[in-house]
Amino acid sequence: MAVIRTRRPWDLPAQDVTPESLYLSRRDWLRWAGFGGLGAVSLLAGCDNSVMAQATTAPAPPETPRRLKDLYPARRNEAYQVDRAITAENLATTYNNFYEFDSSSKLTPARLVEKWPIHPWEVEITGLVGKPLKIEAEALTRRLGVEERVYRFRCVEAWAMTVPWIGFEMRKLIELVEPLGSAKFVRFVSFLDPAHAPGQTNRYFKWPYYEALRMDEAMNPLAMFVTGMYGKPLPKQNGAPLRGIVPWKYGYKSAKSIVRIEFSETRPPTFWNDAAPAEYSFLSNVEPNVPHPRWSQATERILGQEGRVPTRLYNGYAAQVAGLYGG
Ligand code: MTE
Image (tube, rainbow, N blue to C red; front, side, top):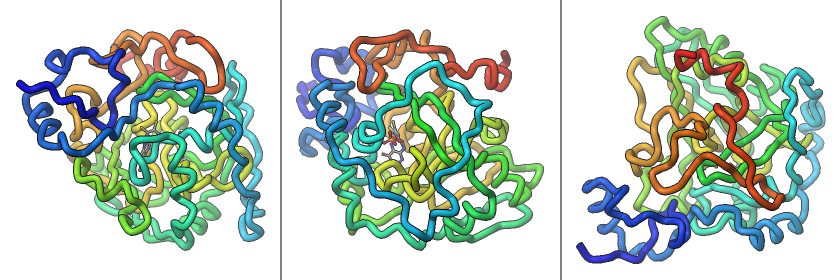
């Protein structure tokens, strides 16, 4: 097999990567090889310090527009404590993974979203529910109310941050639409707008982005739909106007800029699991003892800090979620 030097979109720098034959299934390999002409669209650059330095010096996101002053800032729910410092706002809002805009750099999504219109934004809640709903995102947010919670966030790439998110529990929305007894999974579908999102012309991926949870996971009080961060509405690059946050799972489980939420009986396919099934599972819980096929998950790098710290089981939320997985 010829050696293909082009990186797949989520690859680590060469020095960190195991030989391809050790981790690629034949099907993955053929797909990858077929896209050898894509160019270097790398994702997993880890936490490059120079990239982080550029992110921290970026301007902070805009202030809250007047029409949203009733929602932001929101009262913090002190029941959710984290033993880590909150990540600098301009780092969390400019060091992004948002493949719809750019899979090759964490710094560019914040700039590329500038002209992307996100208001009004309709969200459809459909599938196995008694009360399907189509509602504008800000109207939905007002209907369910918001609170602030500081959570740890862990990307599968082994970087981590601590963020004051603003939003509402997923279970509030689930209860609103009255799922049928047969609903076992919830699927989240992101927007499709290649005219504004240049990454959606990358044919390696199946757009729009799609993720899913089991119903019992989505009903856990930790699981949130997020509409703001750092006391303000969510910046577009962080998934405005509505994204998931599932703090005990790797970050890719939290779909950004959601337009559809679907309830189903069977397990829906998910974006990264479809792209590389050997590397990204459906569950994708943060588990230090389960290495990614190409790197260890035992430690992580906190954005804005030197060195590495141990990864915690379920990202530090074992007390709240271990029961979902048999203890
Ligand atoms: N959702 C969509 N629609 N598109 C994406 O590229 N990236 C995922 C997740 N949700 C992604 C997404 C990944 S890999 C991570 S780590 C987080 O968003 C990053 O969120 P952040 O940019 O707010 O830190």
